[in-house]
Length: 78
Image (cartoon, rainbow, N blue to C red):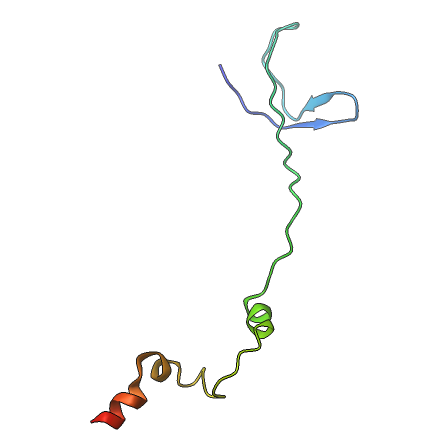
């Protein structure tokens, strides 16, 4: 029988957060996994984009589809 349970280490022993239905002196195998995972610094898309120092037209956001799909060039060729 396997069971996952949460426990707190008080500096000497692991203390389960909920009662465990085991007879005294029962041998168990314990795997310890730390749940206090440090948070990684989050990176902003905009901070990353600004750091690239890209050069281009000032109207990129307004005419994105035109630049992506070449609508300006298609109209000029007709």
